[in-house]
Length: 128
Image 1 (cartoon, rainbow, N blue to C red):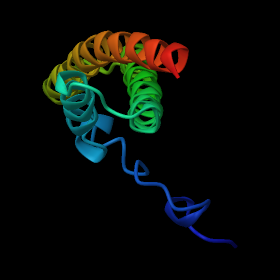
Image 2: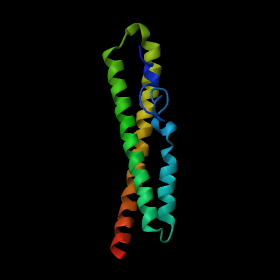
Image 3: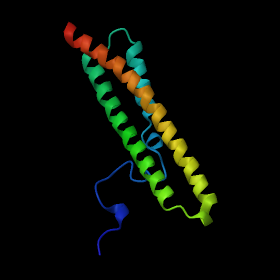
Image 4: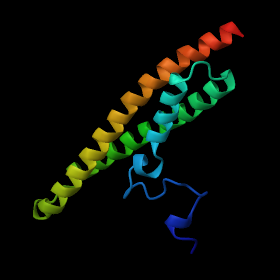
């Protein structure tokens, strides 16, 4: 009959995203920290700047995916709301709301860092 759905597909570090947010599964804070560290250095190499930018863009895409998953789940809950199960729904809605807020906050912070880092990389390419 085939493998269970949880086993289908390639390995995925975010497979259990329904129970963990992308922020927990892939600590974007480390990416932001790398960006910040790179910005504080006097002259990181162009290769290092590009590596950090690549990692940062990947983290931003992962955060966007997290936001979409949470928004989709919020829509599902609202459409299928059962008044008899309101206590459980309230808890899930609160948790989803926190995940969405956290992802949005991290995305704004990361985009700011990436913009500054992108400008520095462009200047390094021009100087090279």
